[in-house]
Image (cartoon, rainbow, N blue to C red; front, side, top):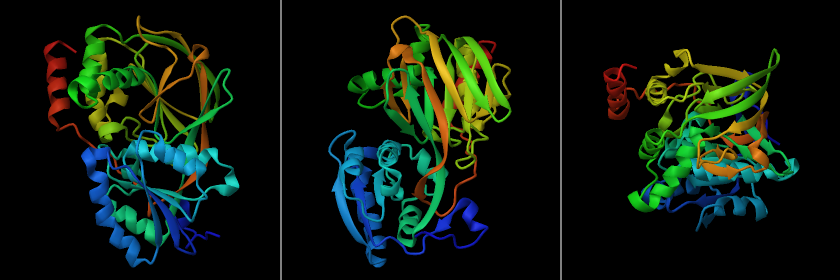
Length: 358
């Protein structure tokens, strides 16, 4: 049984009465340019010093971490060494198990982004490993996604993106064979250059104050987040909290090239929310029904935590927040906002927007 150490700490973090004695440690040796094995060597002494029994498992392909969690007889916790993709697999698979079989999950960051780990307050591998060894846990919200005609429930811990978020990911995956890596910036620019940025959809949103319906005639982004940051620690949902029972739905309701570039550059400092065509809605759930996609692109494709999902049946789906459904190893949730506006890329984009009169 896990007990809160104090009434104050229990709001954000609980310290387990007993630190985990036995864990499965799932290592992605390919993520972050091969950082997984080096990270394993760095944190193994922390687990050994705590007297923990560690069953180390290596992933061999995408989805392998989730398969481990789905099939194993679980111990006192499952910890991944990897990036956001590994974290997504562990969480999704754990939440698909019966509630009485679930154990805490953890992530020791060793990927290219590590955004979710950062928002959990474990952006450093040593901090993450010490939280596991000490049995420090927090409970965080997750998102359940259900599509029409499909009984399966998909879980996501970070983003659910329709429109450009899905199209850019799909194009980046296709470019991987050419560039040797998933180049999201190049993927986005090729879509903008081809004019494949305009989408239409109907949104039915359940907010704390009631239900609203929005007709989106010409949008480029409809992205909901549980936590503040997305890839490269861009603060796309600056008011999102990981344990408030709400999703933050960010809408970019224009699809022109300058509008998209402007919004994405300003997102580096969380100032995109001040643009007149950007709207942020805090909601318990929403249903999105695609009406139109650019020629050659699928309206039914959704970006769930950096993984493409084809929801079929026209792409209509319902996303709902499941409050505090996931127990994670974390000393304290991170409430910091990252400002990356001084990096070269957003500075160049803002300069371009200025030259073109945006």
